[in-house]
Image (cartoon, one colour):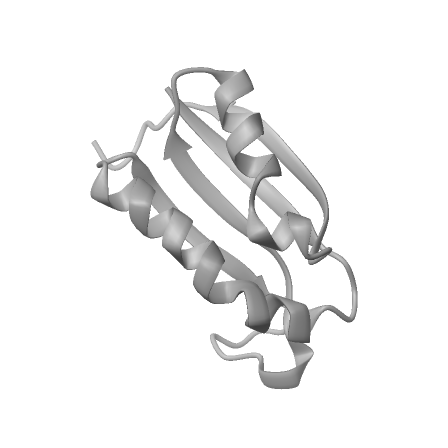
Length: 100
C-alpha cells in the first residue's frame, strides 16, 4: 500500500536541509530503484520552483510500504528528521486513483 509522508520544516533550517540533502536523496533513490516511490519533492516557501533563500516549508513523499508501522519507521529515520529540519512528520495511508 502507498503512504503519504509529509514533513513540516522547522523555520530557519535551510542550511541544515541543504547539508543533509544528499543523504535524504539517497534514501529516496533506494525506494525508486525498488519500484516503491510514487513521487517526492519539497514545498517551496514562495511561488517559485527555485525559492532561493526563502527555502522550503516541508516535503511530500508518497511511497509503497508493507504497512503503516514500517512507513512510520522509515520516515522517522530520515536524515532531515535527525538534523532537525523536520519539526513534525505525518504518515498516512494513501490510495492512488489517478493517473490510472
